[in-house]
Length: 413
Image (tube, rainbow, N blue to C red; front, side):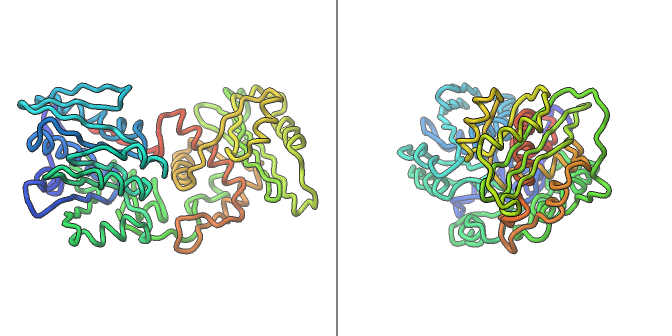
């Protein structure tokens, strides 16, 4: 795409103009990743707001304010300025003030991370709201955002990637779009004129199983089968490379009644290798271990190496304190399970993390790690090394600034 002009697909053009039809009170754009829905929706939202209102407030909502700025505003703001809009952001107030053709409006930024987030938007009076990644937000937050739109002529804007068919947003908004006077537009990658055939093919290679059907085909389907179904231990597990090593980290899933699993990760050439591990099943051993004993096991796994940090199950408060008293730099793991599985799958497929043949418990679990039938929940067995690997992957993704999805494609505008 040329840097001076944007071209739009027919579906994106519908997003840009849907609000001119008085029948519709909401728009829902769902479907594949990188299908062009977010940019078109954001552009349309600002054009609508500035054309129809003056001196009003609007809501811009993302999973977090950081992801909202990164996924929507970072690429949209330069184009809005080229159209002649004046944008002034007050980051401390999470506020964006926009002026265009004599109209000035305020856009409040909200993060819908968890159930407590609904209180953040409560009390606001809005002329419209845009919810980016709506399916990742708690129902209470979405419903509170909708309830805030009490200004005459207000409209609702939703976009999301698919989840399971039992998800409340799919059941109550997408399947009932007509009753709610909502225009539902389903996007596929071909609806984004920015993506070349080569890039689309890369996405098809980099997803499999339920993630392929949801993020590439854009289907609302249930999870089933192996979680990391693309991983073949005979093909993908590696020998431990010879040094030198650039950095070391440890990930830890703590268990007393359940097994405990620690992974030692070393970086070489920008790739992180799981080179050693500790795994203890108290039921099999017939004895539970104490925090102090586990801390000793972790020290032995570290083997005198300079450990950058230990990423620990955030619920293991007493174990975290024990490690800190022994001088380990400890961080609490991000325990968003499905986000972590997606990120781990991305990193494994692209070769950014590699499991070495020395880590037999991790390799055993990855070959058995399955979804609960028809549910977006991993089966609660054979999952302890999987949990500590997920903690490590989410921590690494945070380092890289990748958030919940490691793969990205930049839009030229």
